[in-house]
Length: 312
Image (cartoon, rainbow, N blue to C red; front, side, top):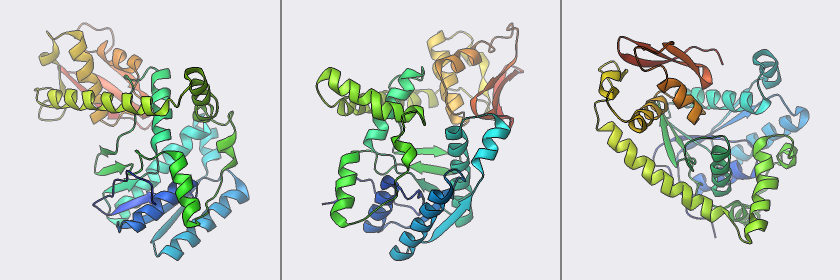
């Protein structure tokens, strides 16, 4: 029996196919449900011959399933040295850039990612630990510009995915770095923190984390709808500051957070929101500040605009 719940995309999608268990399962589910899917594999230039074998596996898997296949290569270690950033950050950014470009080239407006319920729990913990808003997790569908980022397996547990692949006799590629707690912070959450929480509470904590993320998502959706009903922006899409001038600071922070998300600013924390709020007043010492992802907030003529500078 196939894992459920599964959200079948209704539009043509590009699938980010790594060759690992999760993306292979998503590919098989998309094909099984008759979705229009093209696969895109990104070779990061990190793991030598193992990465070459991953690419070959993906190529052959797609050929066997009759799925259109695209393959791209990028030298992530070179970018890490150039930009002085972590391997994880550089790989993620390049992967999303390539998936976006692939979708545009193929005429698709959606990209499917293989995150599942256990990934969601890790994301909730990660965001809470770094001071992000509430128990915010990933969304089934997130619109960024012209591209919708879909996560059809977000309600499925990792164990159910593994069991289904074994049941249908489908193999996958293993990335040894996923089992190394020192390789990435998310690995430590998965391999150390979640098991420790389960042991401390005497139960599986993932359902509770998922429930918290769902409730936070519902509250967030209600707040977003309320904010979008307010005259927050001018015809040029800039945040209209006179409207916020006499409003409670809590509403100002919510409006700034909403505006930053609409502008595509990644990795927003409470500190980011507070820094932007500090430049809103005409009497503020500064009129601009830098934001994550190479973005900058600037106040001018009683308006706030957010622009991408290209400097990470």
